[in-house]
Image 1 (cartoon, helix red, strand yellow):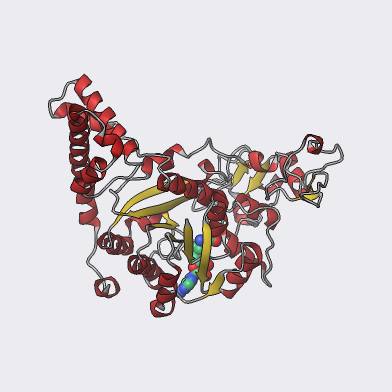
Image 2 (cartoon, protein in one colour):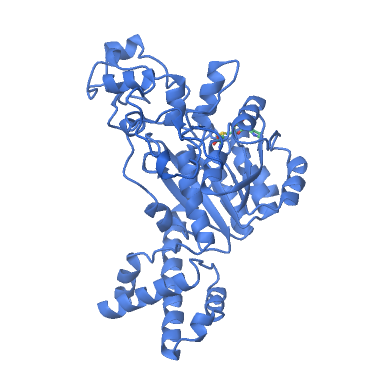
Length: 451
Ligand SMILES: C[S@@+](CC[C@H](N)C(=O)[O-])C[C@H]1O[C@@H](n2cnc3c(N)ncnc32)[C@H](O)[C@@H]1O
């Protein structure tokens, strides 16, 4: 699949999507330092652009005809660290929604802070995307379950034309792993360079840990040399066993390396302040003064950037800002794979357990409810995991399949009926969810009303 990224920053999301198998066509960001870093590390397709100016970018993106538009619009207006006034930055979430709605790729993926989910701006942006025909899954992802040792919680909204809302939720949940800790990252021996004897096919011997190895032959398998030493900063961190991170509000400052790190921010390298040292958090396992100090390359790796990533900016603050802004690449890889699998029909949405209770309440016996649920799951798999926001289209798609046409008539009507009942259950559930959302929604402001 071919993707365009908006608000690409230094390239965390692009890197992860590329590792999942996406072809990144172009990336846009207004900050030249971030664009330069992106081009140095990901590939030379990032350009400096102000995405407020839709007329300058939209025609170009239409010409690229991407299958997906992705991006993490600025989050300061929703962030707990900001003052939560929805202003210029929040408008860029609307710009994202408008660009997607005009270009209308099959898919989009948007990342933001959790606070965005309940904002008036996102309510407006969602309406724009709905009107353009997207079904959406809004997931709150904890990055420590998706490949980085960081308890970073973020909102990911993934949309696809014509789907029912929630169409990808169960596959995203199924892609989660056990929580990753700092020891999992720094305690494993990952050499900066790996030796494979040169072959006629691959004429070099030294390979980085972030690239595929050459074809493995019997003689290329060698134990890691006894002389290999982990990076001195990593060895010091593992020996110490604890690390400090400036707490949010009255939270805990000291973390064990057997936990994930908290959300990486620009201040992740700071030492404890005299104020914290004089009144530490009662839950700190050791004194903050005795913890290890994280180096910038370690903060970058906690955020999922590979050890070979080159950060070059005249100010350390700029590097930390780019790191803190990023989507950890492994998170983007995990979500990218879920999308590619669904596109190829390799995964299908689970039929929620609540469907069984809903059927019971409507008078179905347990056995009959289980049969309906199984038939709905079967129909979903036959449709290659697609859900349709329009029931008539869903049934027409099912009927067009040769596999369906070859079934016995009673089985065909069971599958149709199961999809009808499932659609009834989902409509009922989204009505119940919609009510509190409508109560919380604020009136449209000029920008979105104009859209
Ligand atoms: C949250 S960061 C995105 C980080 C990126 N997703 C990654 O994984 O590295 C938001 C980005 O939006 C960019 N930005 C802010 N205002 C912009 C504008 N008007 N037009 C384009 N980009 C803008 C910032 O420079 C910043 O890099």
